[in-house]
Amino acid sequence: MENTIFLDHGLSAKAKGIYCQIRSVENNPEWVFTIKGFASLVRDGADAVSAGIKELESSGYIIRARKRSENGRFLKAEEAT
Image 1 (tube, one colour):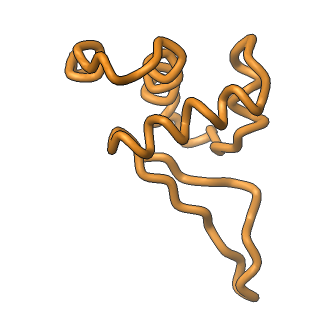
Image 2 (cartoon, rainbow, N blue to C red; image 1 turned 180 degrees about the horizontal axis):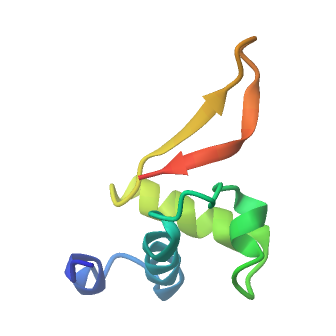
Image 3 (cartoon, helix red, strand yellow; image 1 turned 30 degrees about the vertical axis):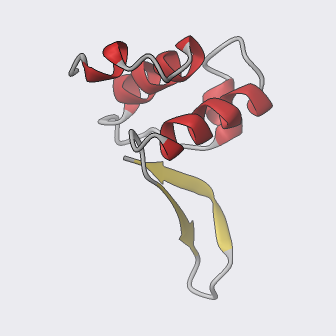
């Protein structure tokens, strides 16, 4: 993992930790990213995880994409890259 994120003083420690946790599971083909699923890996609740992910997204460290079913409805799973 690159060290750039650790040198970014504009990010909270929570956001940095979330980023590290995402990177630790991103290559696991069995991992399906959801806020609730991710929150189950850490002590923080879904709201705290969501806030940290929004912070990472607004800083350009991750890009979120919600998948849609064939009929256009959003699926529970998201992609974070």
